[in-house]
Image 1: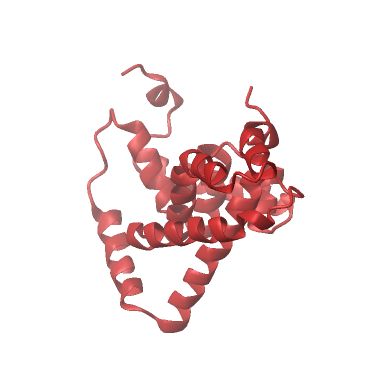
Image 2: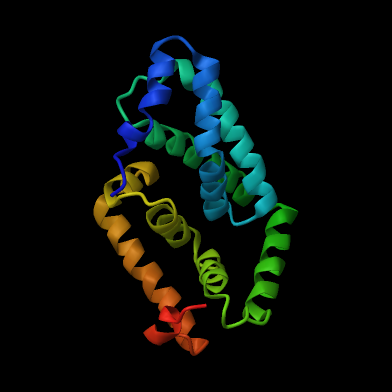
Length: 195
């Protein structure tokens, strides 16, 4: 059973309370850098944009760390900063109709027409299908399944009601299942075979 977020992050919070901001941030980066990047990938869908957003998010976390008051869990606070940074990036993308949008569309089209991974590479295929979902479903699935967040945590991090998270999870799973059906991989026994 996974420990609650507050318990997992107790050491970081104690370092902050003791005035050891640099040590707290070092531990925070060690624990959250990859998770922040994955969230950025899920929200933005483009690795280069995700890399930039993850770095900017961690810089914002560093700058705001002294003001962390513990009202939310540390992980929720970090993910909220990251989510807001990604949403700003998406908004700029929409406003400017940047070339990266065109490149993203071409890349997505190429991925749709690329051959599926070999049958034994089920996890890679599943990840590819999740990456192809619309942003709201992709980010919800990523947080819930890949980051092991509860529905309540995902709702708080995304700024939506819990019912919306449940609906998005249901629809995302349905979309992934439909893609698996199209590939002839929707039979349970295919996923239970040992490699």
